[in-house]
Image (cartoon, rainbow, N blue to C red; front, top):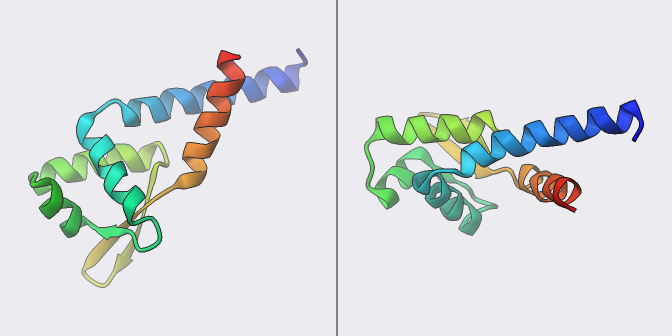
Length: 102
């Protein structure tokens, strides 16, 4: 394996670790499931909060984890924040897992 291939593999492993931490929580998986259903429209933070019936502070905590590992992106729409699933991160996660585990 060349140095370049080793560095690329190391980056892939770091991304696997980050995304795995993001996925390692039932609430975060529920958020991602909701966003998967509405991937084109996304959902506002308020819509997610109402659907999951969790406190706003808890939702903020979980969304911050999902943003930190690039599973969720957000845009401001006036007073609302709309959340979207970042499908490219999930695709890279699957690809990286395949490279590491095969």
